[in-house]
Length: 418
Image (cartoon, rainbow, N blue to C red; front, side, top):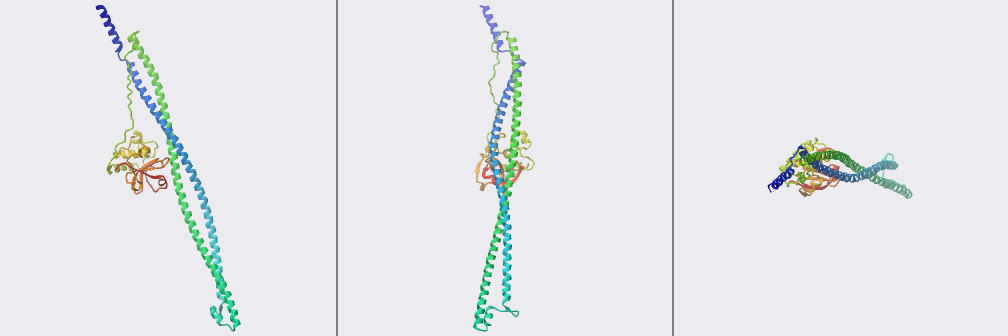
């Protein structure tokens, strides 16, 4: 009986020993590799999601660019048509000038006839009127002859005067037409300049956005390739480490297989670095002035970076796009408008409360329909000026009266600080 108890005790010790095998260096290394592999897999999933998001943005951008290209083509056609209209108008003005010249010549010729007519009724270098001519008649017959002659003169003179008056009115109308044409030409020229300015901004936005998007796509795919290479290397290292660990277990346990205590912890502790929730809307003009002061401090010193401002490095280098610039400026004023990585014009347009454009105040967010609806955002400064980060000038102060901004601002205003 004692012998059986001893055997059971020894067996228990051996069994217990197999469950609490010592943690070797290979075991620790294998667990470290597994953790690295989980991290790399997680990063691969995030990078794939990022690439998918970039692809979606690229598709949206391509569709938007098609619309912009159509608008550009339409604008070019309108410019071509307007230019032809200008040329036609100039030719018409030249024709009017020729007609005016002819009219003035006819008036001058009639004036000459009237002058000769006046001289014909003068006698002995003294002027006489028609009544004197009649009174000096020698007889009734002479009186009748003179009356008939005078009637002929009067009717001829009256006809000349009527023609003179008609030509003068025609001349005045022609001059009015010329003035109207000139005014119309000037208006057409102003419209052409506005169209050219809008076209320049659209082309700049298009080239800048597409170029930056391609850079991001290439960088993301390169990073994904690097992560996949890391995953392959880690998988090979993990497989080798598990093989070495298995040899150690077999050497320790002999032929006893058993489940060693290598219980893989199913702690899928996803250290989620999710988006930071939006903070509260702040009150007080101090936050507004602090945000504007921070943003104004880099005017002319921060070139536009599509997709920038969403990493600590970009923020340190003051490299933003329009939405990340607004988020950063207000963050410097103590106002949280969203997370660093998750803030865009699509999220900013729901911050604060809507305000009528006629009631906008300093610090309000203004949205512009550039490459898409509400595709650009800036901070209103007052007096028709706003602070923004745009693809043409980077961080700058612009005017709502600028033809491009005037045409793309459709009155969307959000007040994020009361």
